[in-house]
Length: 273
Image 1 (tube, rainbow, N blue to C red):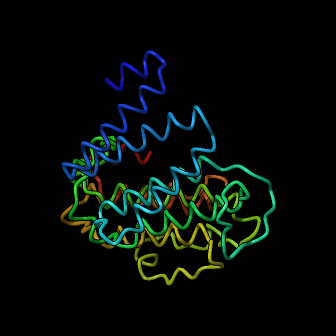
Image 2: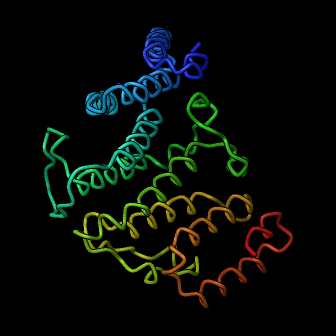
């Protein structure tokens, strides 16, 4: 099987078996297993030839752009592409903003990879509210369901939303060379103020604002009275996404203490300290 071939260090065998898995899943219309097979083959092809990465990325781009691709599949493909572009970053350090990326990826700069990663993370949350109705269990072949997702009944909204928010946050250091970024301290920490904030962007690739918009949408979907643990965990995430060296420490601590008082007795309060 695939795992045995991986353990034995046989990339060609892994690729062949992964392609068989992909085709079998395609015949049976099992998209999560198609993704598993595609990503496994992609990973091992890259070990043999780095140029194969461009071809495999193009295949994923066509897949996600296909009108027949479902909302949940598209969201998953977008978040995967965001991560792939982020971790595949290469090329020169020309930080000039570009409105149209060259078709030949071998000509891309690091800035271009970062822009494309941002585009896909942003696209993954286009139908964020609808993803609340889908389960991460459907995508178990490629998704690890962590301890915290139980608070959201393992819905796809929290997985895609959090991955997009934190993925975009991590792009700030590269994109800030070319695109103005909002100050993390400019966002209200108090939720009652934050939920109605207009969150204006400083540029098309404003990472802090885009990340906060995602949290604004996710928190609006959770009723703190009916789902206190889910809301509390997501609110902690909103605060923790702010880089520690960019926080107003006093305001941050004040808001955490306010949360402790509001949700006294909740099992998640221990994670606030």
